[in-house]
Image (tube, rainbow, N blue to C red):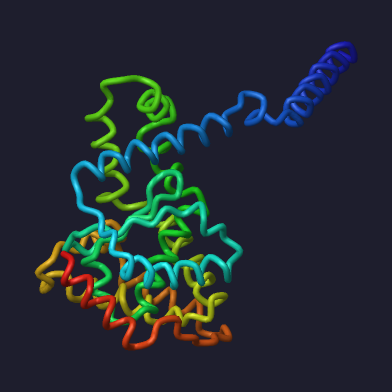
Length: 267
């Protein structure tokens, strides 16, 4: 009996010793998964943007890009985010939509800018999409719904155009799960507060679009891809309730109105 117990204890000790040794290994580094994912992300971003460029019109108006960039630069600087890594693209589309692509491509439709009543609402949308980038939500979503093997094959093989187009729709037209959306919302609120921008207009924007979705003539993709917007709006309000918020204005009223007018003229 003692011999059996001794053998059992020996096996148990060996098991935990092996487990502990394996636990110390950085498997991400050992198999170079992180490097593969980063390389894949860069190639995917280029692949997706190439598809969009061939089918959509980008608004390259210096005046429009400059005004949006004033806001984007300020947000990044206030939150120690490298602005240079974010690739801003404003598309000439009436639809109310914005989304992030792999490798920090930030897509915003002109229709969304038109729908914003002030710069703080637009800032909230920008912060929300930046949060998806910074928290690696884009690749998490693709990895979960498509799989790393498929993503890698898309960037290494030929004849994957149709697969790429279908997976692109996951980012532009399909929702993230509730946990990722909630994390992006609250992270966006933190970004706004650090940038001295009131998060309440962003919450109001979510609430207004959710309430008016049926009455809006444009397709509100940003609400369909970000469900439960009323509930999320209330969570943002609750989250910021006891926080000290300084409110700065980055664009003058004249600049904001000029931006919206220029957007209309260039569509």
